[in-house]
Picture 1 (cartoon, rainbow, N blue to C red):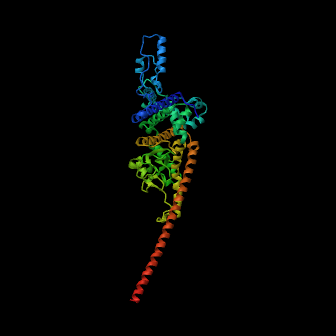
Picture 2 (cartoon, rainbow, N blue to C red; picture 1 turned 60 degrees about the vertical axis):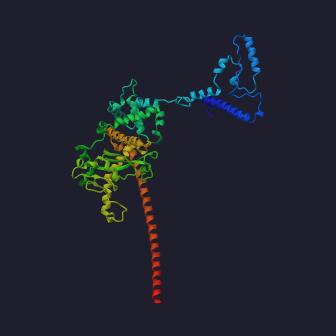
Picture 3 (cartoon, helix red, strand yellow; picture 1 turned 90 degrees about the vertical axis):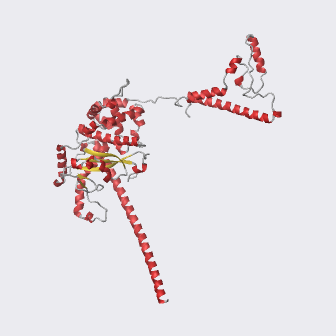
Length: 505
């Protein structure tokens, strides 16, 4: 057992003394009531604790020896049972009269004890900021691969990011106490965005970098606010220019020249939450039996995000969730008359939104045509780049694999949405400033591996759904057959009764 602190020992002593005095007073009250009912049993030497006389010496002019003798005699003549609070050896009569009762002293002590805001003595947690110092100095210059593994961006991209958000008002205040340097706040936030689970928790990040818990939360909020500003968003996530659109069309034309006008694609992904939200929790439960947030991503073949939709719960279907994107709301402005967007079979088929033929639907005979199967294959070759884009995003910012944000109300729900938006903006900013082939990027390959795993889970889930649906259909068919047989038997029985009645009236 850990040793008790001085504060805990003082609290235990005060509680013990208070209870002893309380019990003594309760016994005194009970004895007084008993002797009032039975005066013949009263002890003549017993004195009530509340009515005990003052036996201190009353003469202040006597000598010290006589005073001592008087005190001794008065003490010896004190009746037994007199409590220590009224000890006859008091120095003077006036001091004895003004002396508070033990219960009052103990009560004042307890009030003083409870007036503090904490029970335990404040102990300092031993931490070290050596890793943060190494990241921003030594590793940044000599070991960029270690720097990127921690903060998910290259040192040059990190410097560009700090310069881009340094002048944001959130990093400046009118106080005499200056804020933590922007570099440190940015490093703390990027580390949280790049990790998920317990690694992104406030306590683990604070212990890793040797900072306070409050600084971790404040730094994350400051960087999120700066990265979600309109100026930063416009510079990191923007609609494709004419040159970028032409490059995207050429990439699609490699699959089929007649498809070059379908130069962008949309896909949805789920961002799991680490716990059930308190705000309409059941609406966040998705088809994969997780509590998650639905995110719609519009991208180009080079995995660049040009539009997105964030904030809807995981139970929301992709066909309705993507209506909140800018592309769905302003397609007449963003897309030309002969352009369209590629999507999977979850999205509604229209002139400007094309998807593959649906499978496993019995009332659509076109699913069995060989040319349609081949068409689906080539559509998948084009549309798979949207999955690569989402994998690249989650490969860089792993917090999107398991968002450690407790959604307890509208404010925390907005905080979770801003977290996802910040990761999207930072991903676009990093792709612009890192200037490297994303096909050979470690985060891209990591994201591909993650998306392959998710596709396997999705296929397994769909197989289970189809098997469950087939089993339900069989059970329903068997019940219908049994009901039909029972109905036919009943009809034959009724028919036989009719014939018997007609033949033998």
